[in-house]
Image: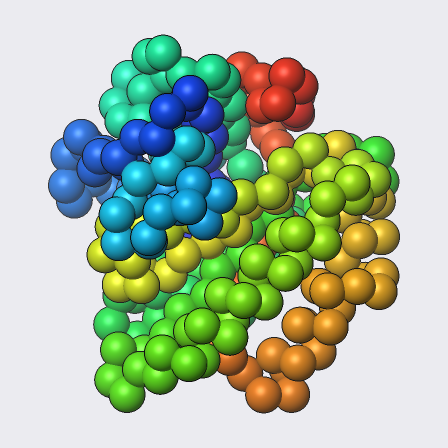
Length: 240
C-alpha cells in the first residue's frame, strides 16, 4: 500500500442545502489514495443518507505534497464548486500527529493512514484537526452508532465559544457509514487546540468513556499543519 503523506481539503458554505455530488476525477490516479465529498448533515438537520447540507467538504489523501496540489488544481471547479457559495476555503495539509485507523485506504478492514509525520507547529500557528470513526458491517449494533453520534453532538454543542476555535463540522460521505465519517475543526493556534483537547468538558468525558468501552470499531485523529491555503472561512484567511 502506498504511504499517505498529505491531505487536500476544501470547505464550502452555501445559502441553501445542496447535495454533495461525486468528484469528477480520473479513477485509479496515483495522485489520489482516497477522495470524497462529505456533507455536514447534522448541522443541516438532514439524514446522513441524504448527503445534503449547507456545508460541503472535498477531502483527498495523497502520497506527496505535489500530488495533493495537482488534485486540488484539477478539482477546483468540481463539486462542490464555489459557484454561488457564501464562502470557500481550500488547503494543502501535512499531518504532524496521527493515531488510529480508518477505512479510507483499506475499505474492507481499515488501516493506519499516515506513517511519516511533520514536525509539530509553533504554539501560535493555525492548524486543522480531522477525526474519524467507523464500524464493521458484520454485526453492526445501531445502539453503539447512536451513542457515539450522541457524544459527537454533545462535543460540538460544548465547543460554542471555545477560545481559538474558528469552526467545527462533521461530514458523512456517500453511503452514510460505508466510508468512515470525519469531523473537521479549524483552529487559530496549536495552543488553543491543546488547551481545549486536554481540558475538562464533554470532549474529555466522552473520550474517557470511549476508551473504557469503545462505541466504535475504529477511530483516528490527525492534527495537521497548513502548508498553503486560499480563500476564507468564516471571513478569516486561515493559514499561510
